[in-house]
Image 1 (spheres, rainbow, N blue to C red):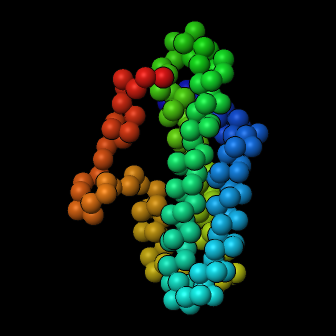
Image 2: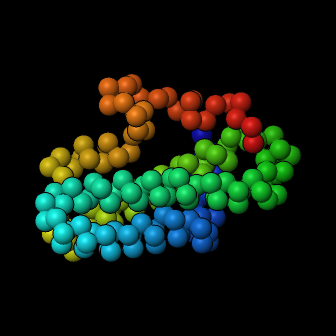
Amino acid sequence: MKAMLYGIKVQLKIDIRSKTLLVTCYVVPLLFFAIMGGIFTSLMPEAKNTLIQSMTVMGVSMGAFIGVPPSMVEVYGTDIKKMYIANGIPLCFGVITLVVSAFIHLMIMSMIIFTLAPIVFHSTIPSNIPLYFITLSRPSPGFHPHQEYIPVSVYCPRFLPL
């Protein structure tokens, strides 16, 4: 566990210098929020009721689907992969630290949207704030609303070729 926490700490330090992560997890989602939030609320005033949720979904999707793969290339396309192999560290360790790091950055971006939306666009804050953040932080269900949650082992199986 200590090694995992150290790996996440190192990954967060690497992410601070990563322009890819900065653009995909912060700049583009927050610019989209600033531009489209104004458009949504001016064209449809009732969009203020769901602005925080819709902009958060867009920002998290942007960071997860567009931001994580380049970060994986930065780790596995360099000598870091060779260092993992030489030191006997499982290759999925890099994926796990990237996912946890991206989760932290996307939660920060979501909190920025959550804080700014009521101030800038006078949007409605979700009625149950703890439930909102708990729902945001858990794995998403499949495409069917009544489907059970997919376990993490489906997302990162041990036989993942890296």
